[in-house]
Length: 273
DNA sequence: GCGCAGGTAATCT
DNA sequence: AGATTACCTGCG
Image (cartoon, rainbow, N blue to C red; front, side):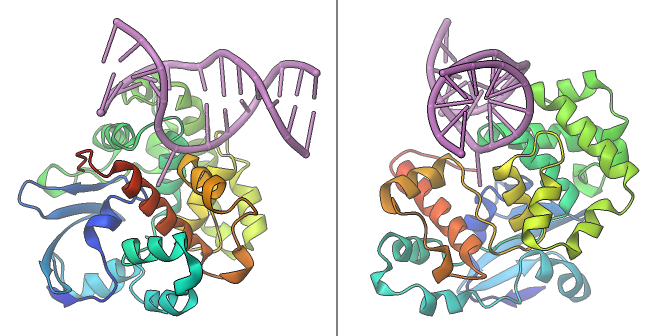
């Protein structure tokens, strides 16, 4: 189905490091897998996109996944011309959507992400899915269930390139499986309590917890500080980022800062998905 | 071939 | 509290 979307930058969202399950195919079409479904999206230009799904699935799943009901255009008014670096980041990255991922997938993927480059994370996550995930059509695989990872052998997880993170992932998967609807139940917690609960999982510190809050639980005030954001804070916000000026959206702005900082650093060097 | 990568946790001062 | 360090392994 073809839809017209404002404020939607597919390429930048796919490469934003939120989900590690985007792939740009040879024909330029983006394939993403989430919630046990594979989807292909073509950018037709002029704000028109072709989604390889029914209207029903779009409304029930993908609209939500891409956070299409949120008014990202409002950020234009909130971040003024005088905002300097942040304004430039907004102008570059507006259209990047905060994805609504499954909590378990986000939790595991960001545990894995520590001390890894994005290409390395992708390779690792794909290996996990191929080995432990449900087979979908076209040689695609869903993200593994907590049970599948909880019962995975140490050797099999090592073979996926998890390295020293193997016990982190296994124990996290076990806790989630034993906890039943544990991750769903966390939805009712406020930001501080949710962050604290997430940090109880092994291998989850402040940064990973903030990523899971932002990319799975839609906590738009979560502000993950990784090495890129730290560089931006050091250079542009020595007094600290003015969170109080952007209530309810500072996580989105964090994502824009992240994309813009990487873009500036990577200018000139070839880089693709 | 070799340093480094979207951090965390343990171990210090 | 804040600084320092080991940690697996693939990618550039």
